[in-house]
Amino acid sequence: MADRRFNVESYIAALPAGLASYPHCTSKMSSVRFQLQRRPLRRLADLPEELVDLIRDPPVATAWIPTTIFVATILAIESEHAISDAALAIESTKDMLESPLYRFTLRMLSPATILRAGAATWHLFHRGTTFKTRDVGGTIEATLEFPAMLLPPPILEGFAAGFETISRASWKDDAHVRLVEHGPRFGRYRLT
Image 1: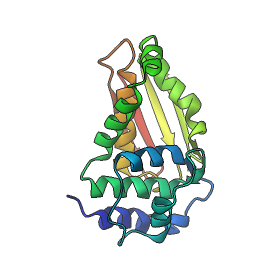
Image 2: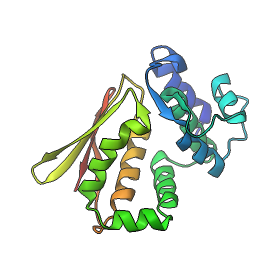
Image 3: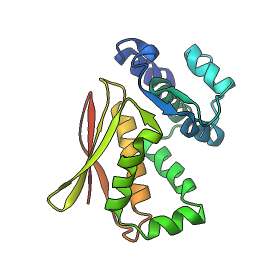
């Protein structure tokens, strides 16, 4: 199992003001609540106080929380449960797709339409970051932009896995979404 403190601590250390960095970047609590219900955190002693408070007394699902807290909590879950962000994203997305309504609706759409819809609705779940798509020679490229170091590579890989899983719920179940390039302020994905 990975050292949870190293993952969370190294993430916090990479941020300019630790967990207080980028207060304009927020994410819906619903994703974190969903993950904590599925994979509770039991070993809290080494976690920052902000995470422990959120774990012990989680806000309602519709609350906006700092994206730094969102990311650090996900990294803590992954470390404690020895699961990669990509595996966690695939598992979570598949659980969501158990709903007959989602399955039926997505089956009628193309992977490109699903990815474009994700970009168009990104702001409903994340603020202070942008997710845009564009056509590039017969494929769809998506770019996620954010302040420096807000979203580390494991989180970007997890988004790719989640995007791919939901795209495969379309009529084209062999769609691929890959993280093709990333830096401290962006992740670029390609749908094929």
